[in-house]
Image 1 (tube, rainbow, N blue to C red):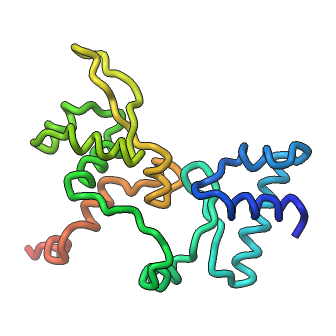
Image 2 (image 1 turned 90 degrees about the vertical axis):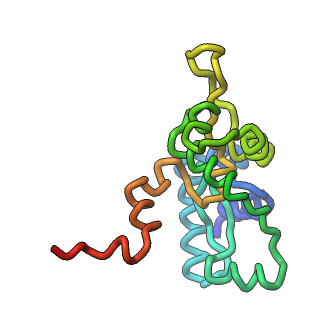
Length: 184
């Protein structure tokens, strides 16, 4: 492993969130972006080839060292990893609406959910899962909400386009009886 690869590995090991390509490139001013990408590729291949318990993942427009999925349950059972607090059903529902309709205002979210969402929006903002991304043109110029890189990181996604399509969700969430073809 060359020095740049080692330097990038050390930086990723130290970071508690995904590190962008530009941040990694800043580690060595003499290295080109292509060399940084090659070092990332070398790290990825090394972890796979050597059968390490960690992997290099690309998520939230950055790179992060993560526990391989097959070891996550054992580590969680041993209470060696901190898990984020679970989201309430109301928060999950609101977050899903924002993820798929962003930018979206409070009134539209409330219209879809049928209840007030002020507290839920505040909670999601405190957890840095959503943020204000602009203002609508309507009366009073209401705030518009969108998801953050922390949201992508939490779901293990690199970009919003990696979210399942709504059509895929309706199939995945249907019961086996609903998926069975109707006889004529």
